[in-house]
Image (tube, rainbow, N blue to C red; front, side, top):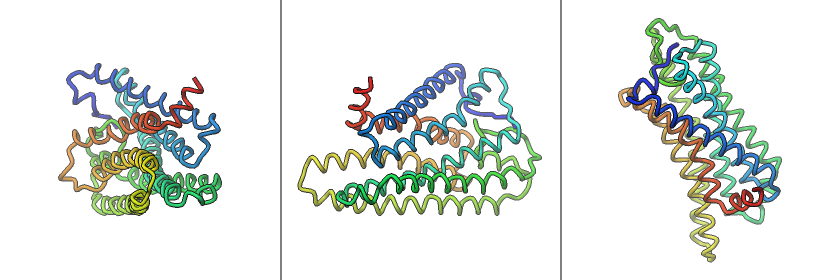
Length: 294
């Protein structure tokens, strides 16, 4: 396959390449620092920070799967990718993306227990429960990868081999097939509905109970802390789920290659660089731990 991606649409490809490279380094360093900080600081060994470290790990894998190959292709002037490499890239981004959807639901449940049942929190969210929830998120994400990747890559591709994207995203690859993909697209739509519906239901229920509990709080400081924690989480939820709904659930009439690439930039490049900023600069525990470490 041949990528006809972001740089083909830009009037200043060299400048765009430099900007994406800087953003990539920021995302990589920010998430790595956050993971090391959480694992090295005893005060951050709680369920909330365990899930944040998992989110940072997923973001690191996500951006490393797509961006380095795109930048190397631009530098070398070779934007080709073999079918097996395309399949591996597709599997990894589907697995990590699906895992992240479920992880955000686990994080919402964690906040619900912490705010609505604070006395039972150490028991309900002990280390074993956190490991089980994180493992479940990775497993469900891999199911998505194992299900969609083999089906996508076994379609006959007898049209142009130019992928109008900067990585092997399922909708972009499917467009190259010369066989009828309507049934598969319906299956993919149903799969995405289920994979979004379950986490969205958990997140909505958790935050409904949280808002009700916060509303009854007498402590102004407690309200501020609860809102600060939940608002940062909701920012990430809106960014990730909004782009996923556009990419996989809207009809094809809403899509153009240019729009698809811009939306993909949000969840493959922008979100991984924003997450450590959202969870570190807005969090006093993390900034305190960082100052202590430095």
